[in-house]
Length: 377
Image 1 (tube, rainbow, N blue to C red):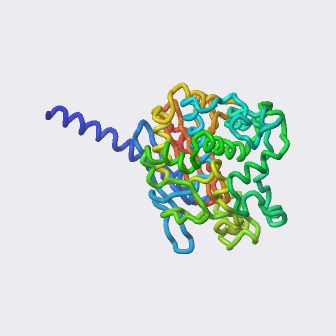
Image 2: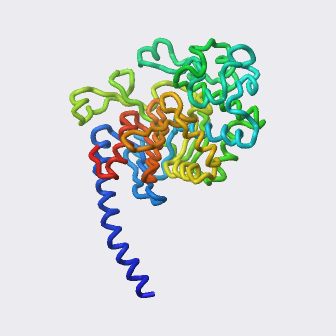
Image 3: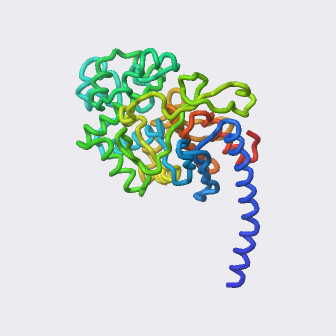
């Protein structure tokens, strides 16, 4: 017994300094993003099933000076798409749909020439050819033309019917084009094949089984406990309240404006593509369950992680660069930002959730992984 205790003590002595040194190094990197890009949010890093970093920064509500904490929930934006892809693949495992079958078999609204050309597979990897209608390119265009598909309340069926009448932008499968409606259509397929609302299926199949207690589906009318307010950032005075110029060299001397979501929009209109919220810890529960084959069988997960055009799999992007293979999911809607990365070689997961649209969040996540491996960002 004495020998065992001595061994444990020696291991702790050897391990703790390395762990604390790693945390200090990450602290320095994260603080640089706080200082230079006003990062506001939560950072969580897990390596080999051990959470090695979990800290929060900035304010969840600037009006009342409420700080972000590790229990703060954030709008996930397009990270929602990964959850929708998993639900589709679960139905595929159960024999309730076929990935290479045309969507007119599942969505009567698409009966006709266009629906017969598009497959579920192509919706999953954004090669459907459907036109993207819910983007805004500049503040000026928004103030002039608005944001029709999301600034007025619409049901998911109404949006489905709108897209079903649109011509294809290109031949399905011929090229990659990121499109929120691809995942919207997947959400409607989930409803048709289960006879339940998307929100209900999400809760029954993922949220409740994984005990994701601070995760759910957003509606404009819902009051969500501990949900951070997103803040939009820009150089136009139309954006909102003036704030100090960024300390970063790139933005030094410029005048910036910040507001809490300056564009009126209905988050539920984003539906299965971007209407979820969660804490970083809950996203980690989802990640761990996915890669432990608790949500999908190994062969199905392999399908999800197979890169197609533009390295896009099913609801995720897959990268294999310079010997570093990882999968990632990014989300961004008017101040709400998220990134979830999993690196296979060293079994590391990086999750960053933010409520301010000022941080180059993908680069932030990659730099965290580089720092852990002793590589200068």
